[in-house]
Image (tube, rainbow, N blue to C red; front, side, top):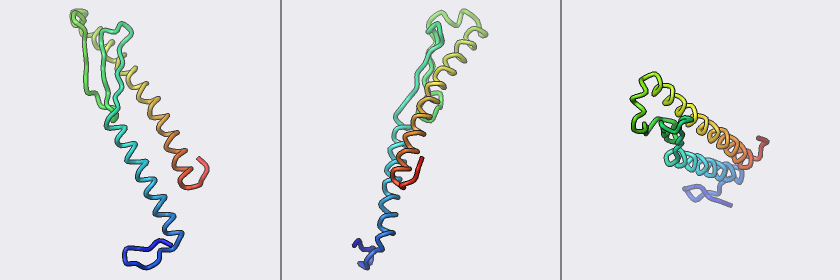
Length: 114
């Protein structure tokens, strides 16, 4: 039987809940690390504008190919928006996959149905 910090025996259900909490904390730490380290890069259809979103979906980089600005603000705006939409779609797919993975893991840890 586990003991608490004072040396007294810990109730088995309390020990089980603490193990579950530790596993849930590890799961959340892994997700935070993933968000801090991943990125989503996409272009417009002409591949003249490229954007990168970080794991928190903040815009962190923009590349505009030489000569593209000569096409005018409206064209550049359209291409920039298209690249942002494409990167956001990639990020949304990743979020959905993460959500499913986290739901399954929480269900497995807690012994409940997802």
